[in-house]
Length: 340
Ligand code: PMP
Image (cartoon, rainbow, N blue to C red; front, side):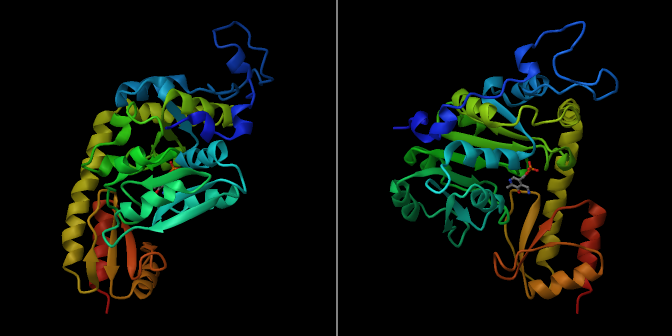
């Protein structure tokens, strides 16, 4: 039986959060003399600690109540907060499935939390039979599942089985969901009190520089994110840019469709090359590609000013290729064709 009060760290349950000037007075006033701000300038006032306008817009866009939304300084902030809220350093543990996004492991190390890394199977799927017994592990609080997964590109099938069988928190990182034909787990938020869905403005929205990430979860879980986050964790510049992006849905759709078309083109073109052994199917804006000599090809491309992500250490002989503009993708194809 899922009981959030048993999963949140005792010091976080008891935490009295910082109350900022803008938490204490939320109305409109003639003179704001409560936050030690400078009265002059364009960005002299602190931003909204709860990013209300952005949450309103997201709530409409995603059909999720505002109280179920946390806005972070990139989704990397939300990953770190999960450890800080749920895992007692030196005692509790988390679980993930490799190869996957590296920050689950780095954040675990920073927070002195043991991360159990279970390999995905040969199709990069979760081996459910091997996973379920691990849920009996004492002090296992968190499971991270990246879907579509970075760097493999595929969506993970067994997420709902994991949600149903684990009494801790299941974090589903959907950074790449907009490029996928599969539905987001956001639709199931009400069904699973242990679900946290991460999304970001860094990928399909084209706003990696703005640093705006999102966590969606039950209102109770979100209240702990709000308790633990720094008072003004997202700057007004950041959330204003995100709001502007949401107000231009055609731009988002156009860019996304262009990238999806380029992804198709790249799959077909790469498959024809001599140096390419396998192009893995992708629901994301990148392709995992097995080649004849990952290190050699990576280095030759660097010489030509084309930078891929060398994943040879993670998946043998594999390169991860981000889908770029048509021009960038063509440059890459030409360079690969010219390889000896
Ligand atoms: N999750 C995954 C799977 C990612 O690949 C990345 C960035 N590469 C992130 C989260 C972090 O995204 P953000 O820019 O929102 O911090």
